[in-house]
Image (cartoon, rainbow, N blue to C red; front, top):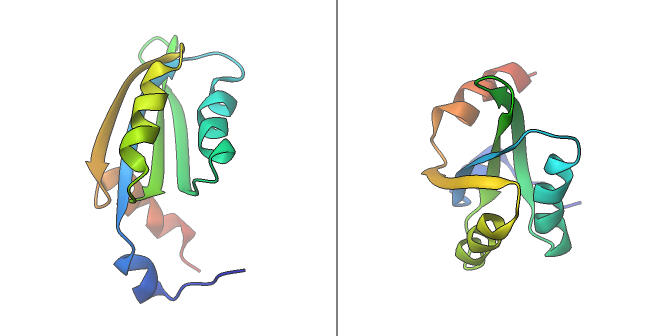
Length: 103
């Protein structure tokens, strides 16, 4: 296993993807499967229903590399994906959650 120190982890360029999807069983599997089939590592996942529950929002923390723009285009082609937004790694959704996972 490739263990990174805390400083090395911060040095890796990351992005946060906000993905709005139709809320039904299997949608998370479709989205994450797209990354898995291409051996693209997902560092963090958060998913919750939004509004009246017909849609969910998936947040993915991913490493930034030359394949990411293509991954976003492929996400946008999935039938259940309504929108994809790319944010900087400092986005509050994962920055604040980090507090809950400290020993």
